[in-house]
View 1 (cartoon, rainbow, N blue to C red):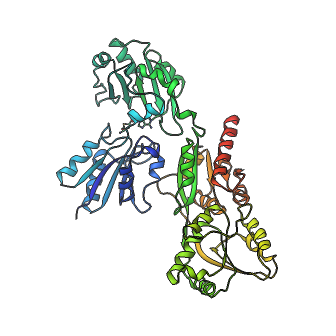
View 2 (view 1 turned 120 degrees about the vertical axis):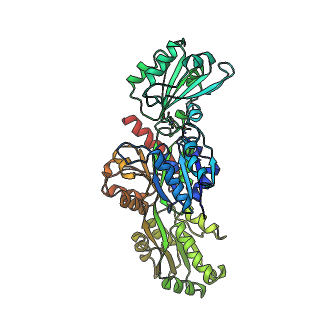
View 3 (view 1 turned 90 degrees about the vertical axis):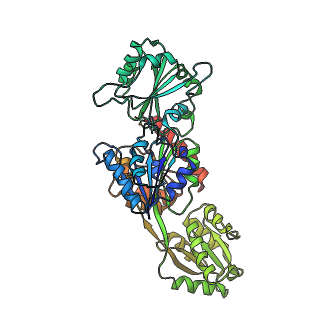
Length: 506
Ligand code: SAH
């Protein structure tokens, strides 16, 4: 059976600018053919098991020629796969989307187009430039600055000058002098505002404002990096008034968030809301232990009233334990057991089962939980702790100091480390592309370290929840900041402070 190809626009960089339909289609993809212009945030959404084919041009890397890309799409679809061709911006705006469809049509392969937010409009918007404005222009034009094989341009400069509309040049940086000279020769006012907008909608967004007459000189002084667009028109003058993206508290900050793959990323959303560019790399994965004998025995004892306290140290710990309990019994197996949770995230996981923790420590870490719970327990209490196979030692040590407590520490899950197969975390750190890494547990630090191997950890600025997490990061030489409280809000606040500190230092 023939598969299908979806030509999907990934938007200009910011993952929030990908369409809902694009996201949905991507989540179902079996093969993903992607370009260099696709933002890292979007790459992070590619399903773990999808086959990845890089078709873009990134210096030094192998890349596919257009005909090869066309052929790959055809072959994968004929093999019955759900193929997503992921392209920067909109697939039909200078994206060669049309060319990629021809072969599919020839072979009767079904396809769909999922339009994207084009950089031509989104990048000006992120710079406070409305591409049209009734007071200044009545049209907007998107033009390629790409030269033809014979080095000439296919641009009617006279016509462009006559329209008096906003002009947006894509792929025009190398041609910038020719483009401005072409406009001037056709009679354009050299005083007309113009701007170059670099790496728009990402944390590296930058704007160079000038006029048609001075843009070339100003740009040669500022080392423009691609991708970038050129905007010509009176509307460019509005950027200083309407510029908003750079005013967000975490604008310009690129953050790596490592988290267990299963957890929804509230943290990433909170950081994005403050303007950060977030790379989510699921560095650890929790998997239930293969041999459930000990877990089942503990559940049997629990249902017979064999424990006074049931202690949880992570949200995954809660869901894995209750999945098993509910496979064997129902919630009545809990009887009157008291519940303890290490923090709010774990408490929330309990609430999903209609349960509220009887006990939360004043500081959300293993040591405090052990010390305070030991004082809250009646002498002789029997305590069950279903948790990770390599769990925190201090929790047990502290509990053992209690009066006559019987402690049962049962491994319910293992922690596995995973790495991203699309994003080169290591390279990004070495090149200083990551401003901060955020860690919510010691195991995420270990997962990250396993993923990037022997990277120079002194280049990593780590913002951590809790002392144990920070200790794990410091052990490897990272520079660390610790959140005041063990909540995500407090963590984000600490990151804002750290970002200000770094800015002052630079
Ligand atoms: N289909 C894409 C355009 C592909 S042509 C779209 O709709 O956006 C590639 C050109 O797009 C680049 O040379 C650059 O001019 C522009 N571009 C793409 N992403 C950009 C970004 N984030 N910031 C600035 N320009 C970008």
